[in-house]
Length: 324
Image 1 (cartoon, rainbow, N blue to C red):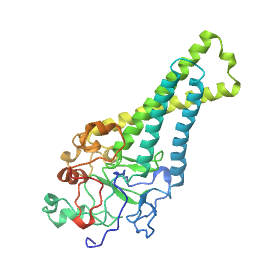
Image 2: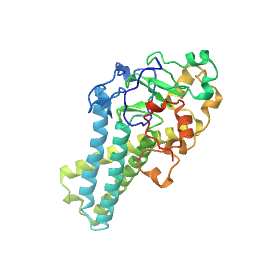
Image 3: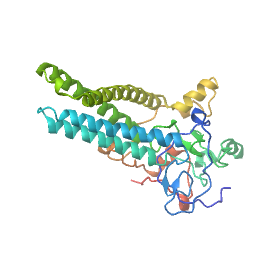
Image 4: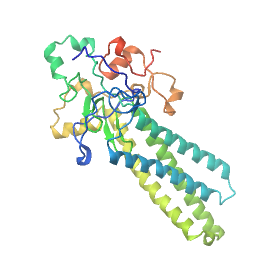
């Protein structure tokens, strides 16, 4: 099983793994490699990482992007009704929207940190003996499963330090793409807050200047709709962002917490496996100025293997981390 050659995989963006089907949706097996040079999927042979089989995930991810586009259209339309700082507001709002879309696409199309078939235990772990190694085999992937990895049935792969499978991203959120997901939540929180502020400002101004009647019924309805969507998105993303912060502070992801409650604290791994994370474990140990952009995190080799929880034979290594 270990000697099996590993096909090339998409660029790493660690994924979320939980051993259950979300919302009762049927799981899929993507373990067979794909032969197409331009294949899109979640198997080891896919050139581009994407979850095509989860129809609901595709729909919800499209809705998230459509909501950002709708907000851009309506807010800019309203902003241009005033002469105060029109260009500045339009530029700032557009930049925030572009960053949110960029982060969404990176989260959705980045491999979330899957465990390849050729993965091996860390050297210190392999010294514990064959019994310990057998305890960390995934019953579905039939390959090595690091302590903090979970198997996601929707993606069909084991994901390192999986937080959850997010239907709005149509992807798992794991160690490799958690940076992009956190940034997405931050930029959506910023863009929705900015949208609400701009729209309310224009509402107060139009009442004071008595030109609210100049708005057509269509414009008024569009403004009401964007306020409702922005408010709902703001509350949701704030709760998700706090959930991510809690996971970093405690070292327990969403799936880990669910398993701990379900098993009354008996979660695979000892107390040392659930210590607080460093932000550098998620955003990389490179230039901190790049933390605000959804660029690939970079780690030195020892740090990289410690974070992943496994090592790969040199010929099979495919993670997009540089030894810097």
